[in-house]
Length: 461
Image 1 (cartoon, rainbow, N blue to C red):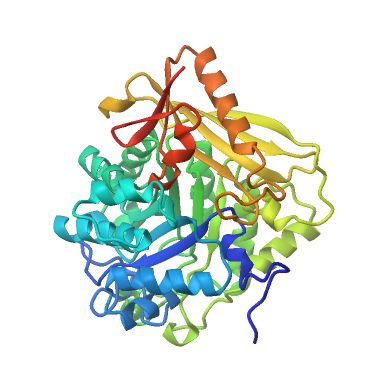
Image 2 (image 1 turned 120 degrees about the horizontal axis):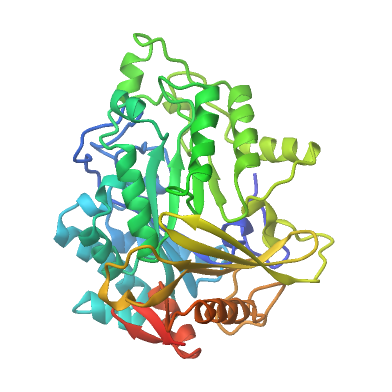
């Protein structure tokens, strides 16, 4: 089947439809310090929790997990597909990055900057300085992590690397199940990590896994509601990965003994449909279902198109959906009204106060958003006295720097949201505002009166 093309000639346009172009690199195989979760394959020849048939892992395997070769190959591929590559979101997958040797971490991150810069630097700081004005800028960086690997020292390292978004494996908020599936952490670790990451300005994602051994549909939905009902959690985004029995996982060996069966497609649809109805305006579902091929499953594999089926069910039901992705302009391009306004939602989260600003029209189609936080606790010196901008994102098909605005990109929405955030912070007694900016967006903030302090862009109000 031919690759789907958009009218402007981009192959697989959905990849850059949300405003940036993602570039994924995979870590070399390494087992987690705590051991192996019951559902988790990999860890020997491929990274733990992945298989050798996952697309990103297959690419990395061919290049012996050399990060510089991975970045170069992926960048060339994106360019050939017609994607704009001046605003890159670097996504690092494959394991608990903070558990790798320090030298490996440092060289891995520096290697990514060096390839995108087109020149090898002597230090990471030098590479980041070059990237501020490079052709291919890292405007956002995502690292996968565990809740028990988010200490203050870990957070300082992640900021040193330029990370702006952290995804942690939460799976289900149940200590008893955590113990039985050999997860290696407790709910308290999730609570502590969530608070620290938000108070350092990170955008935070949870990985959630319905259908785990010792759970059921009722319990999954009950624990999922807790994620948003309890102010100790409330993530900004989710990946929902229903548990499946993958070969080479401990679960593949014991599923019959513990009488475990993974959810059927119908059960998965039921759970997902109800979950999406629960999700509030400020949260985005990044992905549903893992990219694990059918031949790697011990039982019948769940359909990889379930997300589309669920969205179809929700539309037929005329369900009131608040979740971000289904409201983005990139996925709502027909019959748009342009009567936009800034809407603000205020909610408590992890000991702080969140202001979720979004530019929407009368159909609630989303053009851009900003997450402003009044933190609960400041533990980084440069953030003392600051309100925090944890995310500024304008949706719509990604454009290169300097391209004329279309729909929402490059039309002043970002500046509008930022000025509103500055006003709210000032009215609430803050003298400074800090942005957790990707290295490649520092120039943008400099033009708006922000200066680099530590690893944040800060402005006096």
